Length: 142
Image (cartoon, rainbow, N blue to C red; front, side, top):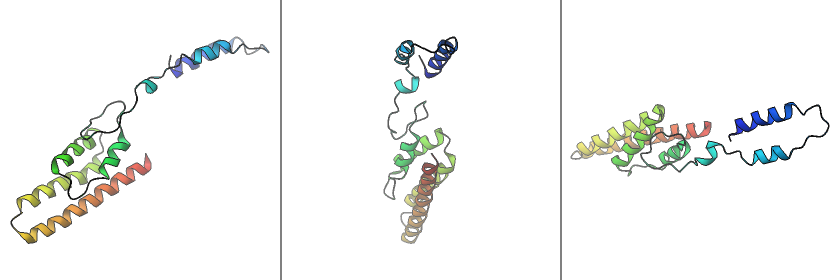
């Protein structure tokens, strides 16, 4: 029985008895033991890289995972994280993650020119900073 069903049952049970001075609460206590909401039976599992939306998606876990990335995080890992962000419609945060992935790919392509490497490093740091800022902001309001 869900909480809503219990509420409706209790309302019906008490409705006819409210004028009486003595109300036997034993049936209420027994029914309360039958309450089993779906939320209680479907426990939320911690976020795993690449998870997509489900009824118990761990939004906070995904955001916290995002706060752990750095310059050394491999592009494949960032892509899996991006998949999760986009799948749950966290596009504001995903924007910087997408830019970060592109910057890391461009850096790899321009590897032969040392000057460009330093510029790409700055771009990468900038996108990581903005991505983490968005994740923190979202965590603050969740």
